[in-house]
Image 1 (cartoon, helix red, strand yellow):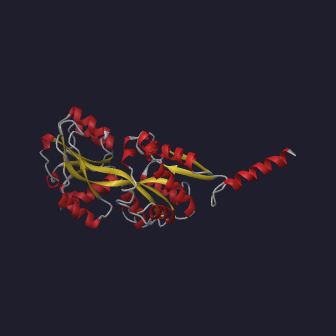
Image 2: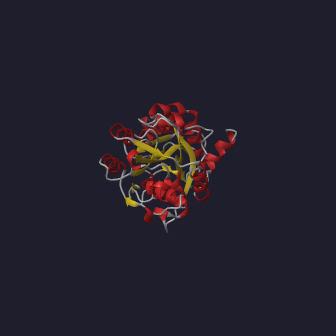
Image 3: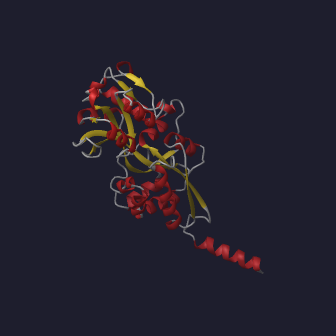
Length: 314
């Protein structure tokens, strides 16, 4: 008798779910390292989905960020992932670190906030433009990283190649250490602003942020459409009081083509109905908006997300 009652209750719970939902739609959100921006935003998203999307059981997973997250989606080990829009573009087109292995199953949900390309230079190196990097010692990011691709593309737009500079393949932490010690003259950093590593350097050394002016940005975007023009506000870093024009890629939320349209619609709606929670999780969450949700979108939208935007008036 007890078993019959339990079965009846379970059936009633399933019947009460929205059409298209099931008793447990598991949604794993591939984020990044626990010390980064992706992870707290992923945790906030999981909380939003669990509270506002009936039938969904969402969780956040710490990962190696963008490139690793592409692979997790491709292998069906995650349903949503934070990925920079340039990395998503490379994966979808089989270029750069995805050369020869196109990932055709990626679909866009939303672009979120800018990951700003900051060219940090020691003031004593007299680097006033990208062209001035010629002959200098430049940290361009880890081999095969998104930052390294950004560096190569920006140098190319300015008429330079790696043959024109003394290249060091260094992580953010290594680049910061080498700038402090004077072993490199400049470093490319792709991250949300303010970037803690640059704040630390600016306290110890006189540094500048090298501009990527509008003409260079336009040239860059003609070949690489995922870039957007942004400004690093004066006062972001110690000793840099003027606004600096540069470019950014966008952090974006990506899903798989095989996820049901209704599920992705409900997840997208919940995200934009609860934006204040993202701002509470991390300051970069305050940059997320419905108005900017397709700026720099480098993938075809998932049909469920596209339906949401259509109904939202966009």
